[in-house]
Amino acid sequence: MDAEDIVFGTFLSKAGTIASVDAAAREITIKDLANKNRPLVVKCGPDAKIKRMPDLATMQGMLGGRGSAAANASAPPRSPEIGQMLELLPALKLEDLKPGEVAVVSAVRGAKPDQISAITFLANAETLVQLAMAARGAGAGGPAPTLAGLASSISNVGP
Image (cartoon, rainbow, N blue to C red; front, side):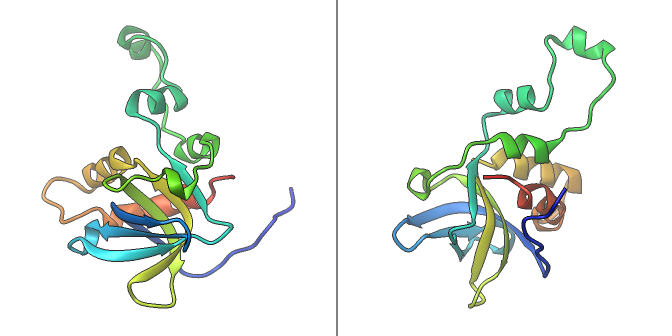
């Protein structure tokens, strides 16, 4: 197997609610959930991968859910392979993003402190954010630390 690109540096994972989309400028403004809803501009270059998470039922099917609860009780538990599921999602156009959707972004720092450059932008990610918050435990103050663990999964999403 040959690598297409080798990328190194500091990667960020951010979660927020889409506030606005400027398709012409290829910018999305989100309200950063980990930073008291402060606006964060996400620049989407030509190589940025933009995708939308499916609803929970579709996602469970993609992760290998099998039939009824009784059938699942006899099957050994499987760990979700979220990176593989994300690769199967079709690419999305900036114009298809909707204000109010929860998004998770894998990115690198931008030219300004309130700006990042997207590697992968994943819309409709409320379930993913909730899972990350639950993994941190009750009473935790936001999803940011756990989302950092998702960076490797969402950074490797194919076109």
